[in-house]
Length: 77
Image (cartoon, rainbow, N blue to C red; front, side, top):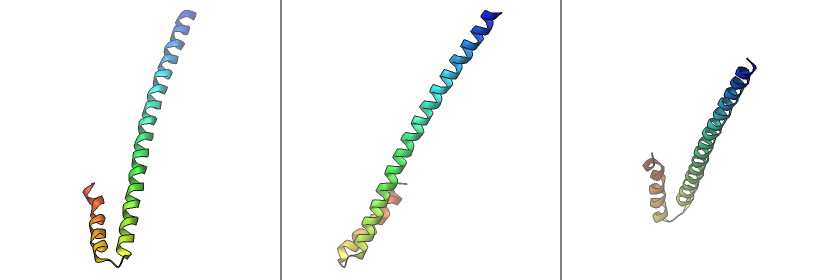
């Protein structure tokens, strides 16, 4: 009977270890996805800031470029 209990505890322990490893792997994937999302948001912010700066320019070519830059995020969808 004691051997059965020890065997059952070992099985449960192995199950918890496997579950923990799977959870850690899922968290790593989630973290990498979050980092990619954050990088994209920073790039989008940079594009928006760049477009705003071009729009403030008195140069008509820069204003045309600003209009083009504004559509870049739409192309990424």
